[in-house]
Length: 222
Image 1 (cartoon, rainbow, N blue to C red):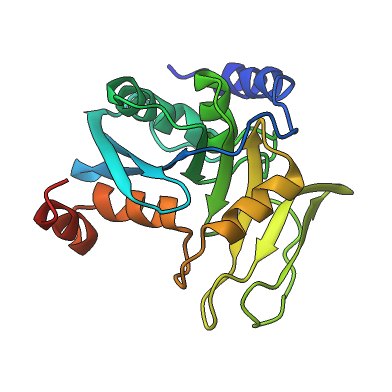
Image 2 (image 1 turned 120 degrees about the vertical axis):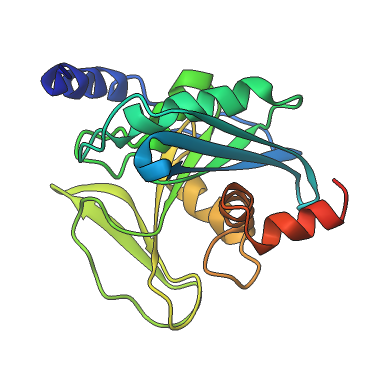
């Protein structure tokens, strides 16, 4: 039987270890990470893609598929996703200095979303780039690309609401680990190329899903 109370307590304890300061030099290698599920949730699939920065040349990617170890429980998603991310990380030949994770950083009820949890486990700076809000007070922001506002929860800033593309829902950006609040937003801005998602998580999502981007990558014989 899953002890959800124990897992929530573990999140609270790990959240105390999260560093919200920029602790990295300008990286030459950055990564995008994405997690999905197959076979009705029985298999967890994680993809990590490594890029040169600032050219965004893809130099490596790893996809890991492992049996899912935990059912979906709201607020405990990082325990479900991190095992596959760790497997993909283990197989990387080159390690990045900064990781964009498709999911929440500290914008989480106990301040430990998957980006924060994974960053702490691999001791690497991370940024959470989520397509939907998990917690905090939502705001309507301008339709102008590049507009943003603070994401607040209980009088505490936990991230940013960011308009990355017109006629698309905003992104919810939050620092994960060893990245400042300001740094998280600035890095996402640096990695936008006209799509809704920043390049690292856009490619990670495409590769993990075996869609057109993955096929294009194979044609280029990475």
